[in-house]
Image (cartoon, rainbow, N blue to C red; front, side):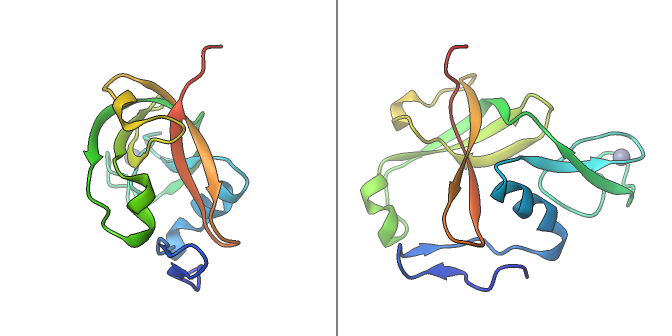
Length: 145
Ligand SMILES: [Zn+2]
C-alpha cells in the first residue's frame, strides 16, 4: 500500500486504498495526468486497474496517458450523506464517465450542480489534492472551446 492514511482527520474524509499495482495511476494523478492500463499485446485500454487485459487476458499490461475528456454515460444523485463530511455536499452527483478513449470510470461531477448531470454531458478531468499522498480524479462540465 502506497498510502499510509485511510482517513484524513483535518477534513474528516475517508481516503482510497492505493494498491501497489495502481502506483503509476496515483503518481500521475499527483501531476494532474490521467493514465489507464493499456494492453501491450492487443492495445486495449481498460479500467478498473488490474494486472490482466480485460479484452484478451494478456498479462503484458502497461500504461497510457489519456485526454481526460469524455461524456457522462450514467449517473445517480445522492440525497443522503453517507459520511459527516458529505453533509454540505448533499445532494450531489456520482457519475459514470466514458472517456473519449473508451474506458468508463465512476467519479464525481464537480463545478456543477447535480441538476446539470445528464447522459451525454461532455466533461473533462480535474484533480483535487486531498493530502500529500492522495490526489483525486473528478470531472467537470467541459467549457466551450
Ligand atoms: Zn489485450
